[in-house]
Amino acid sequence: MERIPILKMGRFLLVSIQVDMDDRTALTLQDDLTSQIVKHHAAGVLIDISALDVVDSFIGRMLANTAAMARILDAHTVVVGMQPSVAITLVELGLSLKGVRSALNIERGMELLQSIAREAMPELEPTDADLED
Amino acid sequence: MQISKTETVEVHGSSEVVSVRHAVRRSAVELGFSLVEQTKIVTAASELARNMVEYGGGGKLTLEALERDGRRGLRLIFEDHGPGIKDIDAAMRDGFTTGGGMGLGLGGAKRLSNEFEIRSAPGEGTRVAITRWNGTS
Image (cartoon, rainbow over all chains, first blue to last red; front, side, top):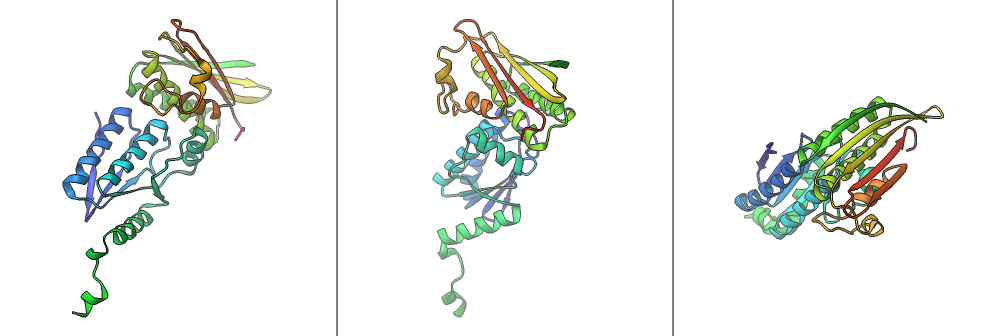
């Protein structure tokens, strides 16, 4: 069975789905992501779906579940790069992907994750007072 | 209406749901469907193929290339010999599921198609046929 690689980049995990996943591959990715969040104390997960030309209800549910599990584990999820035809189809299918944050591309997704993480944990960022010392 | 080309795909597991997506995509491209039309019918096919695997114990997809009044279309017929559906109206409603899914499969597939037809009876399996015509979105 195929396995989607998960990359670690600082406090974030990065996944780029490059293959048409069958349901088992999608569930394995969900499990892998959840355990990697815990293992690396990740603050955020970025999932790039720009190579996916179909997102059906199963993949959509996997994305929503992953985001929900990540949230419980104190990490935020951003899905990036959804193709316009996929977005149109998802809405007609009836899937709203509630709770899943999205961004146009990887660069904007990373910025979004960084700003969410900064808001959530301001003490980790250098403040003016720190800089004066 | 003319049926110009048919193809069948056996569907028994989740990896064959992927094969269905690829076969439907290929046909939709051949018929000159726009990217949005391709995506809609491939997504609908994915939902119906998964339903066959999950509830019907697997089945068969028949793809038919159609032509009517100079317009080309793609008809997909999903047939299984599973337990059938007791209450089709309930099964068509969004959110209704007897399995672990989201209950968007049948209603969603209908919304993504131009024509939708379902026949099922307890003990007699299920047959779902959907059609999309080129140039409709």
